[in-house]
Length: 562
Image (cartoon, rainbow, N blue to C red; front, top):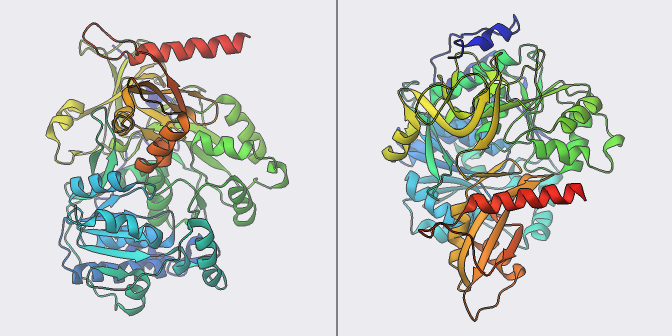
């Protein structure tokens, strides 16, 4: 039996093993920071700057407007926005009104959006103007009652706000004109006309939900992870202690999307709670990121390996000064050693690997930024976070033995929304069984070796094979299909579909790709298609996904040896 919490012996003196967490609603911290630093810059967005006082004032206006539309405590508000001032204002405005936020990926197609709105029961949504047709098309099949619409141009400085509609027309091939009605509301008009009066709602941080964050599963349909105010506050306060050298004047680069829990916690919520400036970027573009780092000089840069790889491989990398970067925690996928070394050499800062899940708000482990780190390891558990490796017979593994990693701590979710069976599958006596297989070394450092689930992580996005397979099965030419993740030097993994066609049908990769992209967000669509006469199966007809994965490993090994 491993020694209990032996990783504490490796903690630097500056990191406590336990923390007294603030038992406050998440939105309390926006009010507190606005009072403490009213004129301090809260965010920078494509030339637009806002102070904490301004963000708080606008969040209050939106909260009051939501309540005037009939929003009650516990109602769900979907936020379908890229990183932008509106994303921050909508998130905190909804919380102030007493709502539960449902973060919604702007890349979602109609079928994905319809499912999430129905499952969450969201009656309100805040979305971009270019996404309104998508929302309108599913509205009648969902509980949606009110849509608040905003545009990127609403928060751009002059003259960018005047030029943006022309850029939008070129980019989306559409001219966007939205008119106010009983159920469509203009964000810009709300902020202009509202007096900011709202009724504060009494929140129990430990029990009341702040967020439904959707994550997929082997059943094919995404599940709503129920995260309380306390879950999210605790994880941010752990993060702040881990980054013990950070100072009040920090600037955090917000490239990670806020509709992903990692970006939400390490960029948005941490900046709001501790008065840091967020530098918001609505999408990842390597050249734009390099220019922004040189000009805005962020000190912290949470990211994923694909982001760092994209910057390192940019042809103009050496033209830019990235020396402001001091600390980065990489998540979502394994961090290659060469990427870590190169990025640290170029920036002079520290880049380490961490680990977490949507179900844990999200971080549970990380390497020390200014202490002992081990490449290939996800590091050690954070303060107040327990972790163990469990064998199939339920016994705790010995040092170095591979089993399923289980975690316990104040950041662990309450469960899955309206899904007790799935909740009971993963939550047992306070322990969350992660589905990730790994082991712990003698010093308490953890390592991931494989995933129990078949989830694919490509470019930091979680992709669930069954969801992609269900779309492929809808194509009239597809008889059988199985989707798997295969190694990819840039994305970590990429999506590959193995397809058996029905007799007499002909279809090529191009047609299947177009079909998938019509029905799935682009990051989920297979990048590679392999047509076969048959798929390997068990005696009872179950497709052997593992055998296909082993074939891919053999191919990769052969290509390396050539």
